[in-house]
Image 1 (tube, rainbow, N blue to C red):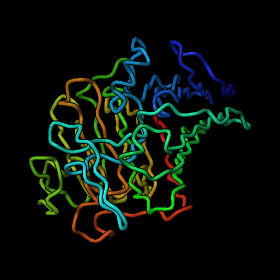
Image 2: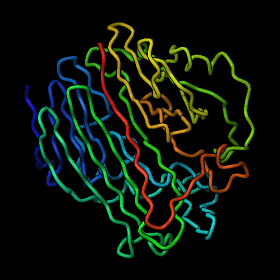
Image 3: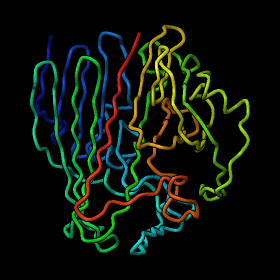
Image 4: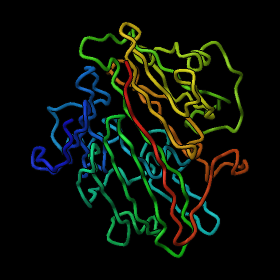
Length: 334
């Protein structure tokens, strides 16, 4: 079995290349430790949206919509406001709806900590320390460390993401993966043959600024397409369908995650997430660009500013010195 882990040059930037069995992945530290590409060569499955013609600068300019970026803080903060138990922060409004969007961690150059092989596992580790040297620190003076471990094995990519509060303040803990799956994800596949299965629970109403009204909507036949795995996630506009997460089922076993199927071949892309992730939001950039984003979030959109209890909104904090790790897995099936 071919197992390798090495750094490579990508148009003047350093990437980590991991190979294990039929899988190959590229990690881009220059682009926020993004899983820039992951493929199963034996099954002809290319999982994430990627474009080899793009330069590093072009990828950075569209960091949310290629590969698998990790967001801190996730999605929208209404009017840029972030209220914690001991402070109030005002982030810049950077979306047309008047909110702060997507945080900043995925926009930074991260450091490579190590690249190694352990048996049939290819491992890359990256990190980023957020402190007063970061240009955003005057806005958000809460220092932390982000550590990423990418372990590619014969059963897929095992992803670990740890945040550690290095400050003397309470640190809001909200994370999201703005994962961009290709649709279709095989070289001969068709978009109309892709189906997405998401274990949706309560559906959340959003206002004109894409902020939760804190009301739930009735579940319709449209929503049930996610639950029963018949949703075609491309070729139509999916614009922020937001749900509370529930347990899914894959091959008759409990599965906390989502999966996409090419119904013409039976091939699947599966994304198993940590139970820290309490919400799913679906978006596909109008559905005409060959990708879709089933995004897991640990807290609801605008959770710091919502009135609901933390067990409803998902809002939580890390105390000084406290760490929290999310573990996920991306893999394929035929």
